[in-house]
Length: 405
Ligand SMILES: *Cc1c(COP(=O)(O)O)cnc(C)c1O
Image 1 (cartoon, rainbow, N blue to C red):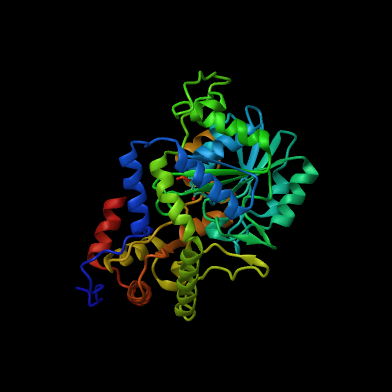
Image 2 (cartoon, protein in one colour):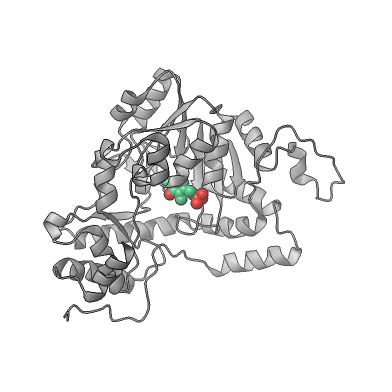
């Protein structure tokens, strides 16, 4: 029997639950009433609003960040025979997008403090086949862009930023997604702003944008995007075999209102982030590194590292204990070389990327949605303290862990 109190709520706090407000609902219903569900005027408006927010020349909306990454690499000329250097501490989509271009992903370990790709590790992995660098601004913390840009310039490499965590992030006064050749964004349900599924490509390069737009809609000539409008019928011409990656108006209807509130959501997440940071200062856990001066952290994830030697409980046990307190948490991420496909295909071993491996095995992300109430935040804080104090696992925690094996 355990005397550990359970969160006094019958409601489970879902990790990464977005705020959807009345404007989104009304806009979505309006789209449905017009019958224009697919790619149309609202997608064009969302692209215009997003590129104005980021102050970039071209924006192409697509149906995911995975699609954005895939297209960005293709238009940048990445393909068979090339190598693309990226981080082992990312979502599998980053790696899969490289593989789908025909190129080979190459991993460079992260800095253990910032959790971002280590520029020195990149330099050690450059070969004559290296074509591009694909950094991820992990958890919303901007990468060391001075060094990444210098490495790209010196070695004549394309630089494509995975900004899935980092819409709002800035580095020395410049906004993420604008340092390299192309920037890719996600509006998946757990991201900083959402469209359900959705993504965006940003670039200053007009030819890249035009080709990405064509490839996102079957490779049909750009006119195809307006072919069903009242301008009269137009034939389309397939100029290369493309993909089905276009965003729908139903998605953009949500996005245009989410984007208007991006700063207030960011401020709320920053406030929660700071509350967590203060509340856990005395606990035997590793908190996120302080944001770098002259940068803006996007505060996408609040991560704790759970070291069994210090807490008496490993990350998975801690995760289950949090679940029992009715708090959902996330793992971002088991390092990429932990997965069987990559081990078998590329011969990767977790131990070869020791910093990403350690973080992946110890990390846990707490709820950080702008939707959280003050009471939710207090509940999360209380749950973390309870779970760290009680060394003995619950009976049910033990059972869950056993079933997992
Ligand atoms: C979520 C995420 C992606 C994929 O985004 P989708 O929009 O779901 O395709 C890619 N990279 C990182 C780092 C992510 O977190």
